[in-house]
View 1 (tube, rainbow, N blue to C red):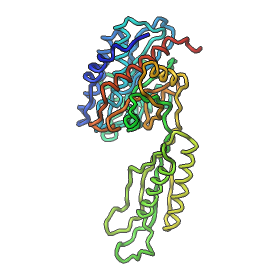
View 2: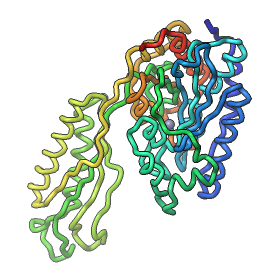
View 3: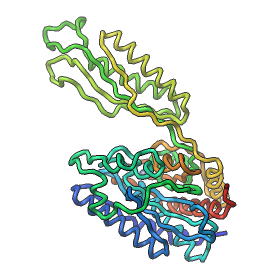
View 4: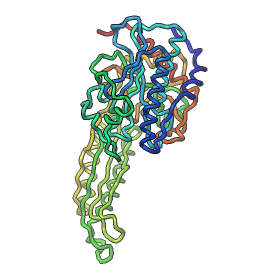
Length: 410
Ligand SMILES: [Zn+2]
């Protein structure tokens, strides 16, 4: 079995070699995206991997196994980021995969099945929505032409055209091939592991999400001559509904999340009573039954508040993403690796979406989380401790080697 002597090296390599794209000007972003991809490919080739790029621009670096007929065990994440993103979200998982390949090379260790390190295109969905589009296309969630046709939300340039421009509209077909298992290492992007003092989170699944668009309609009227008793103020209604959203989150503690992050007021004038308000709701919970209960509570509360003030309300579900439990055997492989290595750990549910969530639809999947400083992510101050990152790499390595040497389930 591979041992842990390589940890010190991981600290040097993973931290110092992480490329990071600064989203300032779109031109820079496109160039930096291409640059980061080429750098990743060069390192993979230096590590003896054969590299392929598919039509979605997903990059797969393959380290051969003893049996070339076996489907590979895959690991990786994404290299893209948010406008104010840090250097660990995504890049850590890609670099962890590369580092485990280098480690196996140094040890002269051959696995039974091949190992593939993947860098997925456009996980963040920041410039081209939706998110996780590269892994989603691989998993058959998105149609290829539709995914490539997604426009940039400012310039309208398509994802496909930009991939073409940086030379990453690859020749390989997207997906449609067996993957023995998928493991993804990622920073937690929340405060739980740090608060618990545990360097490893064994991720048992990702929570479900329900997104809504809510429109509240009242009546515009003059702010001066209209008595309080005669008003149908859409913003007052929306404010109470937003408070209800927050209460529904607290009522379903500790796992529920309930957020209103976007609101528009019409006509948005200081001396006119608002006649219409549009706002969004983002509900998350690891259990579908609770999400359904939250859905019921939201609709009931919105209607109750609207009736109270004489408003009309439309609650439209915009997106539903069911909770994704990860694969029992893959979770066990991660847990076994943590226990053998002796790291403090806990089970955890992913609050964010990840490429692993779509991969879980086509391959047995699990994730490894490491803490990040103050739980902050999607922010340039994002930080993680070298020893935690190394522990995550270590666990990833052990879990993948165990899986790649396991008798294939056929
Ligand atoms: Zn990420």
